[in-house]
Length: 549
Image (cartoon, rainbow, N blue to C red; front, side, top):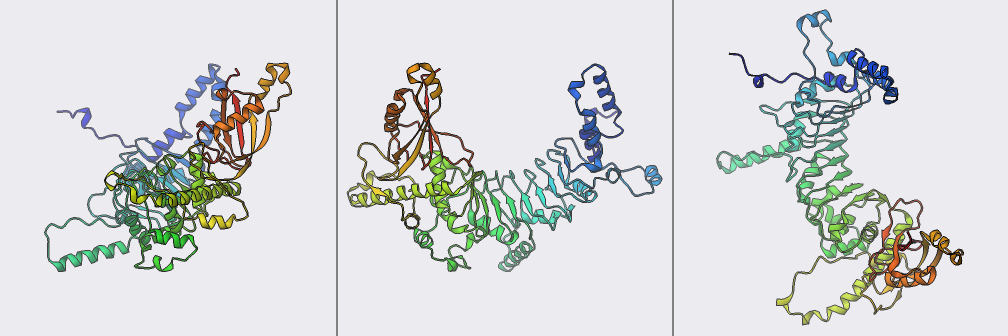
């Protein structure tokens, strides 16, 4: 009885089959015929450079980057027949014949039928390969039977294994031999914890001696799992929550780590004792706390980090996490975090200024360069709000005893300002006048700073052309304004300068630093102040007359 079509094994698609399909080949007659037909039909404009591009790509020995996503690859190469092997002298295969000695980056993602063993057969024939991506192959690392090295390379420096069935670092170390690996990506593997070794549950309780022997065997196995040269590790888009558990694995397996990506996890707030934070803010060294047995010892793996990415961790909602990052990452230069969960009631500009002031070592925040002027403005705003909070705490401390405990509700996480004294001493030459603003509900503080602000009438030329009497209208003016000035009062001032009704005014601002690429921040709440929005000295306020068409 003939077998049904569905029972036939899938056709073998090799690496070179996919390369020829994607990049063409010197003997690809079908491509030549299709191009010749198109050119004969006077469609040359659609294929400008197509022949040259195809000719260049068909020279596989010159390719430096190859992307073969979802090409159905299931074998590394076709096994030559006995006759072909005999005629060729016994040695070469199709990958060797392609002579891809310049290839440095290879992406084989989404080829779900491809095994790590087949990838291991391919890599030795690519002597300059430095980057290998094997994403979205869910069963790639789920090897049955005895675990042996499936992938070995002396030159590979970057390995991307996102959504590949990764379970433990010991599993990965047993499957790959990459002594020069510097960058490892383990994203989207549904990790709840970063395990060095996964211990299978015992079949029976066993004796105490057997349990001790098992634990020592696991510890010995964990000690052998080391990636000594990895400096960049990405664990994004998982379900990690425990900072201590992450550190227990990293400190032993990745001793050279300097860049850690933890985007889109479920990390808990990292809160250190207030007394310890105060000591660190005062400049006291915390050497004893970082040593074995100290309160900071589980977080010692964060100390050498120069990059830390915590974006999209919606569980991080306490600003004390930023204070902990400052203490635990003294060499941090690049930091990424989501403002909306950390400071949900603040706008993005003010949130950024808070983080800039709280982390004095960073030079890059959320892909935006932190310049000297921005740091100065951020630290000044930090001082203002910190002094206000201290004053409000003193005023409410006496009323705390009168609050009915039964009616009390859980307060939101407090915004802390442990660096306020340090920064105030740093900027002691700047005079902070103290006064109480009684006509608005301020959030920036009773202290204010005089700001030099440029008011720019965006469509002022249209207004000048509307009537001959306004032809001398000035579209730009510089004013000295207090940081406590509300948007409503600013609109009243603009009415006097540009003769625009407040209801028709549309205001926004950006810093006056021409070296920073930034979008304009709208000033859309008339009850808030310039300080609330983070308007800095030298900022430009854009005034648009919405009544002009």
